[in-house]
Length: 472
Image 1: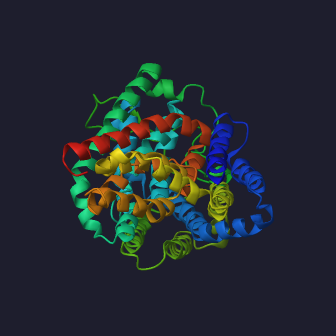
Image 2: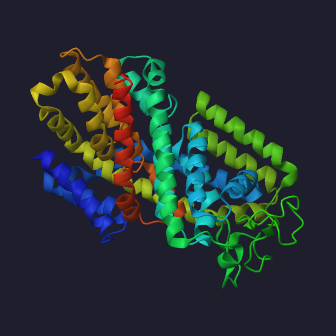
Image 3: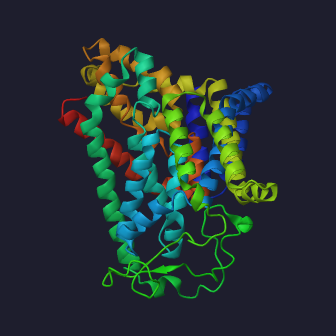
């Protein structure tokens, strides 16, 4: 019964948000509360919710201060060179922009944290997608898939969990998987190319005049900047033009197509004299995160306080920056705490355990020698419907034991378990996905409908490559 109710709860949630009958926050809270009553454990709902909130509180704190930190870094111009580099490559060609999104997300994912990857990627690309009227779900889908492949890095989480659960060395799991993961990443880039071609066919390769037509009012150009951004009031709604139109920059390339920037180069929040200080702090912060010198929430709390104080020493300016990014902070942290209700009920009632055991029990006996393939296929739905902790610590050991009985090594099982990560990164149980859709102003249901099929295809490409190379 718990198995049926668990699947029913997840299905109800997905259907309601994809049909836009409920907001994600409302669905994450009300649906599990209702099913908790159906299970007959309504009296323990409070305990389940508190347990869920307690487990996700550090994540929520990390996201709150990470949004403030990276928001300030965007305000002061730390990422302007990256944006200019992408724009120089992309120009106004939708195909290049989508491919650039995938490349940027993959590069930034090297820090091992999905939330920071999405914050940097969306902050850089969102204004460009908006100006060209491109599909924002293409941006969120491509970013999520690229990050999902890169999430398998040893410091990203899944590989370390698999190694811990099966008592293996993380490098023994990850290093042999590199060829298959590279094929998966190449698959994301190829998919981005074709999605970009589709956008190009729909929109065409636009010129600067077409992009800026009918723009008469100043528009906030920093994601989440809101009315508190003082850097856009003097631009009269038009982006600064560069190249071929008398702006005085890039004059050496007169034949180059007209380009434009989406980050106002004259905004009042820029701190060019502090650029290298901010870069050093950011590099140190990411290094400390990878080396685990301090818990990630503590690192971002200290980092946000430091860069706010140094870049904006006056209290009113600090308050203005916090207010400018408050909308994103509230949306994301609210979503995380709502997700805590969902995960708390799912785990507290035992539905997750029953669902996992049922999935293992339905595997035919004849599939024993092919347990690595089975594990790879199961990793798609299981890592989507449950947390990485639940899958790697609850399900993988059971699968590995079944595989060992048929001569399948734990290393093969561990590698196969990584296959589902491109799909996992769009799971409603992953807090980072709410950063992605929240900052991109995309409905979670729209993102889900778009990304699931492509992310599943990416997972199967990795699985196929792993089997072809003899890794799995």
